[in-house]
Amino acid sequence: MTRAIMNGCNGKMGQCITQICAQDPDIEIVAGIDMYDGIKNTYPVFASLAECTVDADVIIDFSNAKAVDTLVDYCVEKQIPVVLCTTGLSEEQLQKVEQAYEKVAILKSANMSLGINTLMELLKKAATVFAPAGFDMEIVEKHHNQKLDAPSGTALALADSMNDALEDAYTYKYDRSQERKKRDKYEIGISAVRGGNIVGEHEVIFAGQDEVIEFKHTAYSKAVFAKGAVEAAKFLNGKGAGHYDMADVIAAK
Image (tube, rainbow, N blue to C red; front, side, top):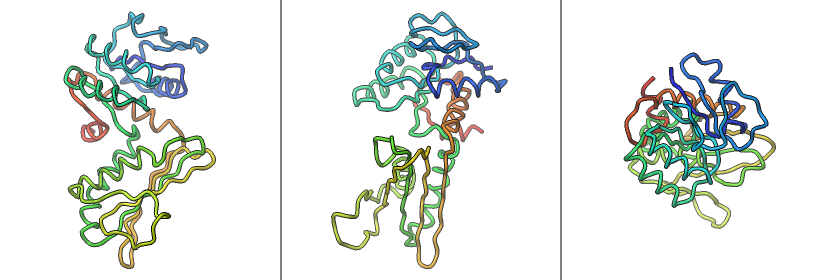
């Protein structure tokens, strides 16, 4: 049984993870951390990590970037592994996390979905088969109209998985409107669509002569990311210091 502290327990993702853990016999949320106390949980909730008096095996973090510095310091001091899901970290914070890898187990991935991370592994193989055969590679990602960044971090992670398998020989093309020329052989095109309430859709296209192969992942709710975080927490229990990601979780299954 993995005992988890849910950092940001009263947010949308925190509550989603709470519900998933309640149905999973292998993990239990033993405490929550949140400034907002308007939600009744089955576990004690503290306003800060410093006030938490409950022992745990791992922390799942879906809070906010401002809280990450304190979180990392706490995990290093208490030697508690953390599934770090909060995004929007500054360069200084990312460096802090990098340094903490040497002292405590931290799992950090661009996307927590088991489906997306399995797709990354499939794309590595596909790229080594299709790219040398002259196939063009394109990624189209779609998200809701409130998303601020483009392309998505997941789209970039998908591109990186292919490019890594091809010894980083490819560049990324985000916009074709500013120049009139043929597509370069060594580029991966990445296009972004923003509209409605699309949770997340990523399509990877391998376009060759007279045939097209497509890989597609669609997230219908944020629960897919919550489920991935729960699986990551169970995996991280008892792990030594280091940087882990969802590929490690999938490899362990």
